[in-house]
Amino acid sequence: MTTTASILTTTILRAEGFSCPSCVAKIEKSVGHVPGVAAVKVYFSSARIEVRHDPAVADVPQLVAAVAKAGYAARPAAF
Image (cartoon, rainbow, N blue to C red; front, side, top):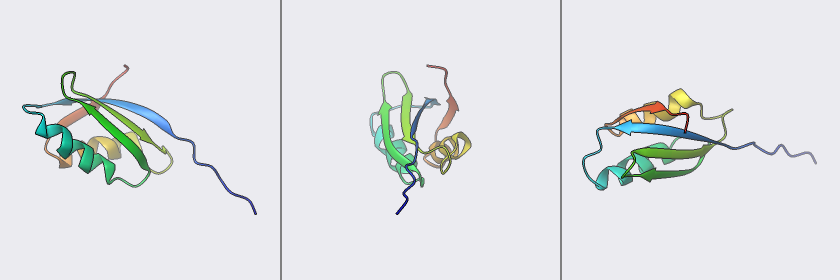
């Protein structure tokens, strides 16, 4: 039997519009529901979103759209 292992990558997004710590849970929930996302960690103080995902299933535009669905703007970040 052959199995294919998915290769996960980490994408860093910067979010805009954070006003309270409850924003963290909203974003983590929304992005976490995207198929292919294994883990999401939002850092309130730096507005940094780290997403561990399978890029073949969940691409960066899908991640940004999930943040937008939660009510916040996001963009890919270099660090």
